[in-house]
Amino acid sequence: MKKCCPICKSESIEALFESHVPVLQNRVYEIKNEAISCNQGIINLAHCNDCNFSFNASFDEAKIIYDEEYDNAVPSKLFADYYLSIGEYLYKKYNLENGVVYDIGCGKGTFLKMLCSLYPNIKGIGIDPSYEGDLNPMENLMFIRDFFKHDHVTDAPNLILSRHVFEHIEFPKDFLEIIREPITNYPNVPVFIEVPDFNWIVENKTFWDLCYEHCNYFSEKSLSEVFNHSWSQLTKITKSFNDQYLWVEGIFNPTNEIKELYHPFEIKNKGIYEFVDSIQLAKQKVLQLILDYKSKDYKTVVWGMATKGVIFTNNLDAGATIIDFCIDINQEKQQKFSPISGHLIQSPAVLSTLKEQNLVIIVMNPNYVAEIKQTVHEYIQEAIFIDAHGTLI
Image 1 (cartoon, rainbow, N blue to C red):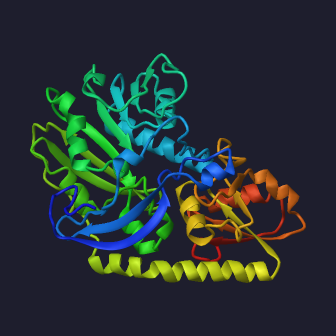
Image 2: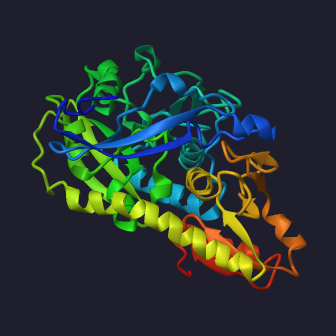
């Protein structure tokens, strides 16, 4: 277990919380026994009192294997619209016309494909070991199925992009240096990073957002420490996706010093302690609520079997005896089993078999509630919708 902070190397760290979780919550299984016996890991949530960084002190990078079986796709119109908003922002902000964009940790390439389709004058290069499909799906787009390496950078970058990668990297400050190394000769290279906002998790007490893959939980202050190099400048942090994410913008090899236009927000220790203290009570409260509904002949449905749904069901129903149905719109996950608890993940179409049933639907991410309600009402007329704390939505 780590004895010092992975970012600032301070030994002033506190252990806060321990949990056993699947190593990969975005890996599903065709055979239930394989799901139940999948690789597990331990979260020992720790907090650095110096740079305000929270992290899994028991994280073991060797346990993580991102391959073609890994799938964190979100085939949602709302999320597609969110992608468009990012793409439009980046194109205008960084004047990407006829420019080269490197997407480091591009996953299945969904965002970069959208960006290069929207703006055909961009040259996109996506790099990720879990990418699958055509390596040259468009004239202006190339994918490299690999971890990022120095020799992947062959053109002067107009933008370095890395969305939802840094929360997976054990030493994020060192990783920023690895990204910068091949572009030391190019001045003023913009970098755009997106990560979950730990402050949102703390304020909303969403224990289902603590997972093994995410070894890092960033505050604005800890992100400023990630950029604390002589060759990098943090220029802006913006909350996005209804405050769940942070857009982190900076410059590599700046030729002019940019004065900070904001003071990075620090998550107070008191708030983190209150969040950790709330976890057990929150589990008990929502479990009792589910049991109360079941006693009144309601069927319980968890909607959204990505990170949030997998961690939630493992915490509340590890034996898969309480939750009646788990639904996800990602077709690649349907008719497969979730890790550890072995819940069967089904299509929304299963609701058509439940027209005579009373249903309570647990929406794992309230951002999608309008979209979910619209889909549900294609199959049934009535249902009760609650969030993962049990609040009606």
